Length: 417
Ligand code: FA5
Ligand code: MG
Image 1 (cartoon, protein in one colour):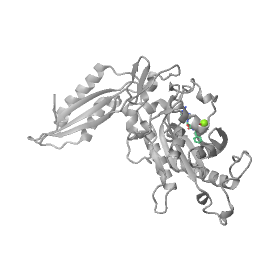
Image 2: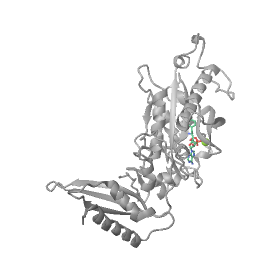
Image 3: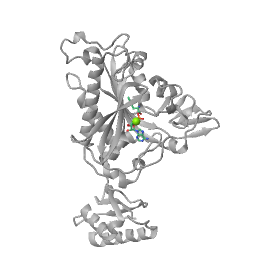
Image 4: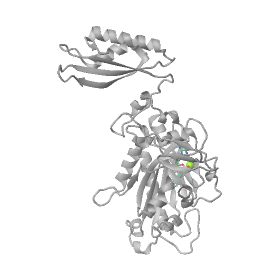
């Protein structure tokens, strides 16, 4: 499978990322390792665990919010470039000029004005300006952060925004014509922004929290324990974090809140009230699949990836640790016997018999029928890996040759060059 890896060209004072060239300056602090991750798009790679999680979140939101005839009302954006302006990432979200999250030591700057987004929230005001009222953004985000089992400088987020008119907010309330979204000269309190009427905030808060608890229950099961924690974000008020109890710990899975009205006003949606949330896909995937280390998401190792090769993203999967020792792959091709039955399972059994636990996997890579003789040939990739030590090339070749010899004798196959 081919990944579209970002190509980098550094010309004196320019840097090319994802086919765009940017001038460098003394803010440029993007490293080789980060550049190599651009364009991997794990969240939309078929069968990747992060892609399964994305699909489950999208399905849930589609189910929860639909119009009269059942069509989803949310638009989903999962392929927006992670290269954004500093204005998108911070200014549009009212992050103050001197806020610590803007520091060079916290973000990857391409130059003074351009940054790898630090959250998918970076796109919200632009999408509102385009006229959207209900949308999800899923993508890769970049932060300089600590190094441990749960932190990695690239991770993935899903952000949602929902904007409602007064009619929508109060649709289930009798005598709703007396209720208002806004209040003139109101005071900001812990419960609401100055401009908002408490009744509209409470209804939006209720819908937001119900939606997110419902999502947590859909992913983790209806018995999941959760709690809401007060939080601060420059772009929402009030704001909360949702924590779920998993493996004897409280894990923060998302931040959310009632959107700052100033953001809606500046984006041309001032007559509505909105809620928003942002969650981390890795956190969810690590809990759901028992993935012990965040680095594993970047693995190209088939021992990892094949454990998630299921069509239905709702399939319950528990990750089984793969060995830390390197894989060694070797192909074998042969013609099947013409006058005897043959089944791949017989071959697998034979491989297991000879290779024992030194074989991690056997994949039927190719099946071919000769156009004239109608003979059928199979090609298998055998993945060798020991759980406790590194296998030598010689040892692998030795096993591989034995397998070939025995297949010829026992299964009557004819080896191909
Ligand atoms: C934000 O990024 C806000 N933009 C979320 C938001 C959106 C709030 C909209 C309100 C409205 P925070 O930095 O807490 O917030 O990150 C959100 C989630 O991303 C966290 O709850 C966590 O699940 C995940 N996350 C954050 N940092 C990391 C990291 N280094 N590694 C993996 N996941 C992370
Ligand atoms: Mg947080």
